[in-house]
Image (cartoon, rainbow, N blue to C red; front, side, top):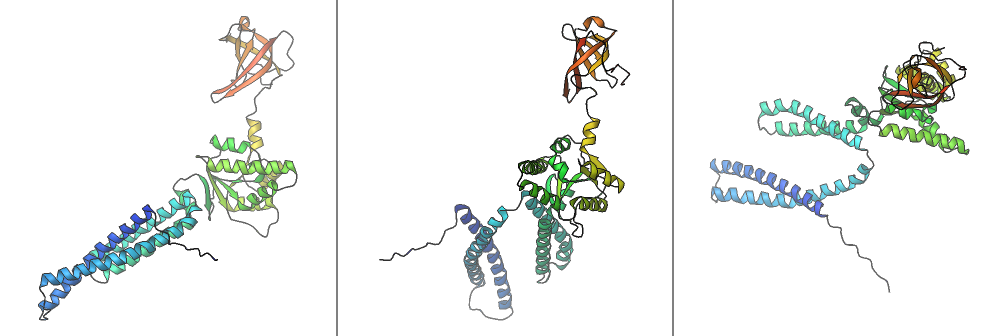
Length: 386
């Protein structure tokens, strides 16, 4: 005995029903207004000598009621059709980023404003003629649709110019002195994210698509160390995209005639006039030879390296007592405060001390040391960095 599976047509949800009824109401109002105008035209014909056999008010009421009825039927069909199209578009739109949706709406709004500026004189001068209104509607439709399409496909470029940050998929990368081109070695180095978040990489970070492919190749490599480096690079890129103060552009620009990734980076940096962010010393030297500005994270780290390290022995002049009992305070040549244990009684004297720890915070850096009675092995006297 065969069973027959019956499928019942799906009904609109509560929100869908409201949408259909709103569309129906709008169509009914429009159809009623049109029917009322048609009834007026029919009565004008009747006044010219044509006998309709009905009272004028009866004609007006009958035509208006027929128009409202047609609007009710057509409005329901149009509402269900529009709801179906919205439901069909909901799936693809779920894959669209919020930035692209905002850019699409901004593009549509720009098209609407431009259309209003162009059609307002036509409507003002043409009045309610049969040609002016359809022409204005056509111009508005074309410009709004064109603006929305332009905003969707060039969303990254549009969001960049309104000051958006995070990831921006653009077709025309930024160029100029404020642009930083990021290579694979800088992304693999986790310090890039901290430096960018601290605000030391102003402007826009451009990541070429071929760099992403190289990162993906590292993440899929057979060696565990290479896989870890590739995954760390992808994590750093994701962190940059989520950072509110960093604008990251993913560029589709490529140089098929160039085989090496480093050569592609140099060609792109020269074309865009951008600086190159890297930790690759050899690439940095080649870039400088070719006139490309370089932001080497290793050079930055060397510049910010503490003047002394734990275990160093230095000579420091105690200038005052510290907050804690027995502590004396002095300063290095660069102004770094040094807290020396058991040196409170040597104010005004130079003592030997061994560095035990270094404390860094947003307000500066402090060095903690222990007083020595032996002659220091290395001198870091105040005012004498040697």
